Amino acid sequence: RSAMDPAVMAKRDEKLHVAMIGLCGCWGCTLSFLDMDENLLRLLDRITITRSSFTDVKRIPRRAAIGFIEGGVANEENIETLVHYRENCDVLISVGACAVWGGVPAMRNLVPLEDCLREAYVDSPTRPLQQPPTIPYHEDIPKLTTKVYPLHEVVKIDYFIPGCPPDGQTIFKVLDDLVHGRDFSIPAHINRFD
Ligand code: SF4
Picture (cartoon, rainbow, N blue to C red):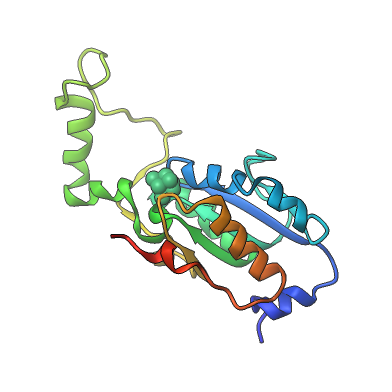
């Protein structure tokens, strides 16, 4: 059994460090994490949340037993953040459509990146009003990847929670299962898209 096995997680003596970060998403999944609300109180003797909207630190301060992550990979900074997160999480869980398959941001994959930028910043009637219209460039602006990628195409992902967003109860169910060493399961209605 590996360190990622739920039964192994349940036998750990120390509190499990739990984190959540976001890449290219809308932060809706992160809000669902907050929607676990008072359910989290039932786990506070077993977990410590080190990184989330609760704490708003930029990097996880120490290794996490369970890492949740929303959003896909859309730029080089996302890749750097994701690789660092993967290296510092025992269990890594993709949360939501953007993380699982790219979601709405991946709609830009249907057209070449240059066309997408031109439509956004030069040709669109809703473009920024600077004159002349230009595509922004600065060395401090993360370079966009050619396409938006789901997380599992960049690093190994252990579990997937679909939905846009999955609700707080679903995220809690996953967390509760892992913390108590139960087989990981998601309610069937979460996997329906009709
Ligand atoms: Fe937002 Fe939906 Fe993407 Fe979650 S899956 S980050 S709610 S667009």
